[in-house]
Image (cartoon, rainbow, N blue to C red; front, top):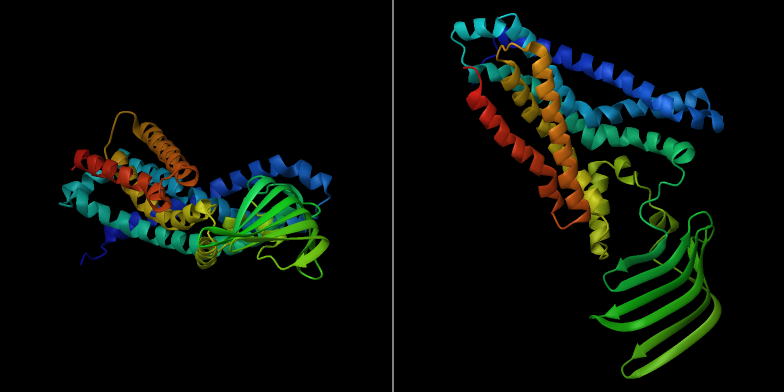
Length: 362
């Protein structure tokens, strides 16, 4: 077991101090940019200052940091390691008999601290903070950021029950030209059609207008018609009005429960929730990868100095983000399994680490 020596504490202090300084600096910049973009909405709706400061920005800071901590890691490592290389501290460490691989130990410990905090934040702290932030956004900012379309909606209420709504009005909780089909062993059992469906908020049920029902019993068919009928469908306006940012407000346990519920009723439109679930674990691991990449780049003293190192780090960070977006899009919209799509950037950049460490100054 490796002991933590004085030089290790020296590097750990440098890493953590620089990291949290960068996090603070970028958080302030992000808040200023976000405020400048939304100030018109704040003034238009006459939102109290207390609401957007405490309900929104106090919870916005954990959210934006959760997305950017991996990028902070590589920029921080390059910043202070390049400075150590420029001041010949890295050469002095190697001259004392410390190997490059032994030098990786304090970087690993620092990444373990930050990655552990990021892991807990992603799975529990940030989703709980997002509940308040997202509620504020949905109320005042993004009033119509509903997922998918409100036309031609195909929904599985269970594996044997399928609903179709030609058009749905979010403001009135009204559906038009609704069809409900029930199957028994892939054979159509009954079909219900209604010109309109309306949510009765007090009774917590749907009321169907101008409906008819076709029932198939053996070789016989029965037809029932009526003006109005109340029914308890396994769906509420909340399910039809799902927000784009709903996944951000769920803890991982809530995400798993939601995904299992969607899967059990035969739904297929929950891929983005699976991507979010696996991303929360993959991102902390990314911190380790980008930490070692930054170290391997910045440990060598070069003529371009810190500027060249930071340019290389920014380029690799940009490549990582692009690859991450590319692979998760294939997982959400295509046939790539979410657990693979989320981890592809980490796998590819792990190979980059091996190459950079092999080429690094020993």
